[in-house]
Length: 410
Image 1 (tube, rainbow, N blue to C red):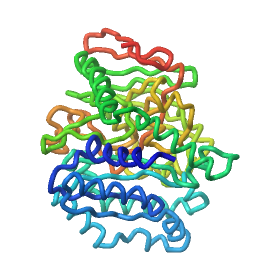
Image 2: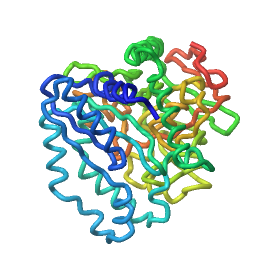
Image 3: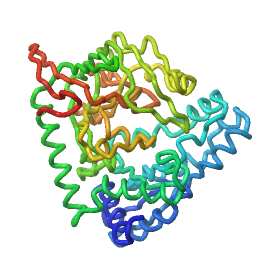
Image 4: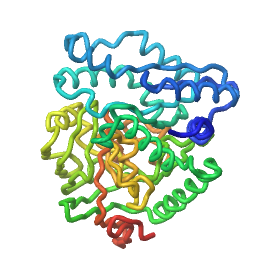
């Protein structure tokens, strides 16, 4: 367990380095009821930093499972008006948003996949405006995580729950740099390192990225016209910086949704809507999925890939070296916030408009002309292995080695 000082430092990181709270700003904390104690610490710290008011959107994953099992498919697709009215209020009042991502990776195991898909699709449609507000950086936001009982037992099987939770706290504390003398300073130094690599990639303006490993990945990913590599700290539309994911180890940009060819094999399991998907491979031609398979969670993968037309292409490519603190921990977290920062990854679905120059001011037609992908979904999946080689190829045909054997060479 973290010390009380470390917990308060954690909350401060989420508010200051993460969402970058401003005086007299409203704060929204989104979390499961299991995370109430930490949510309250964040709320108290928010007022220390001058918050106007703190809202908490409670989730209850156990109730979500009960509803998924007990309610009809029709009922599960009916999103109450008060929920969208609430998120509209948050957008209109330009809140800063903190999400606590924590829960049981298997919570929806055994539930009807058709009901789950219908419910998820209805929710995404109802929350389209809110999603657009975060993906375009209209709102400053961040995601952090803390252990929960079932999650810790999944990550550390065969030990007592209390021991598993303690191990999770130790791992998260180290990954979040809470064991350093000055966590905020450590984060600033880390952010600077990531931005130096992003600057290197931007200077080369690659036409496409090539990925290859012994597991079977052999993929060419064209990059969007006027793409920008981003890292860690981004800029909100209000001109203030924020760090969307904590932890974060990635440098990322937008693929060209019509210029992706080859095959990719996952490196780590994907947890989506309470289901584990593993041992899967995806084939692309001209930017679209043409074939896919999975030994574990095929129906869950199928549900992702049948959400809409846009999910059959990619919206993100992100590069992470194998010596990141998360990768070196050797822990499989079954949680995308952590696992995507242990491995290079791609994302089915929507591109972030911030990853092309002037993207926030473009129409959908203009974004499409740049190769940006549009979808209700954005689902990260991990592809980086210890032996992955990655090259960038410029428009004049020059090849630049970026990764060898899973690590940066630049």
